[in-house]
Amino acid sequence: MGDKEEQSSGGVKYFRLSEIEAQNSFKSTWIIIHNKVYDVTKFLEEHPGGEEVLREQAGGNATESFEDVGHSSDAREMAASMVIGELHPDDRHKIAKPVETLVTTLKEESSWWSNLVIPALAAAIVTLVYRVFTSESE
Image (cartoon, rainbow, N blue to C red; front, side, top):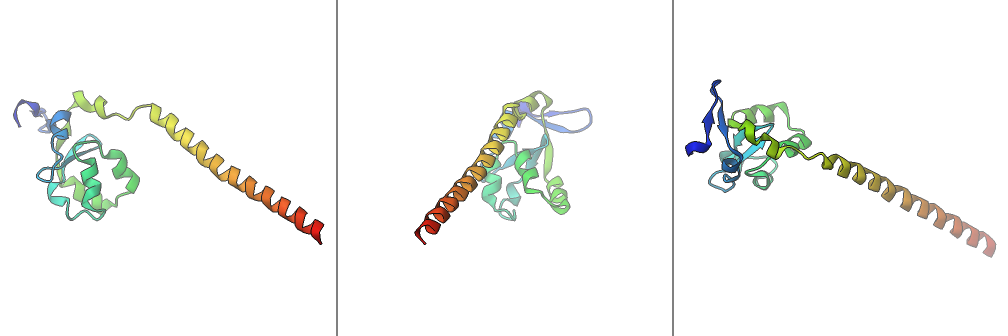
């Protein structure tokens, strides 16, 4: 692993982001969750969500995906057994979520709202027009 890996005074093994990114094959699959590095290679076939879910995150930051799924405490304990070290502190800013994502999320919520309100209004108008025409023809 060479000079990319470092040992902290507390015994934690640090890995550089470039080294983690290189571990994205079926022979070696590493992911990052909350700045901890997990070797999930042997777990690929056993993962209840399917190995492709882990493969999509291979060599990168899987924190958001891991938390979005809402893993059980058993799953978290199992994951803890796969920790091989931590992302080097100098590389942590490289995987930090950009602030712009919050703006994107707000835009998505507003478009979801308008996608619901506009069809509802259209349906109400069509219903009113239909009732007006059917009542005139009677």
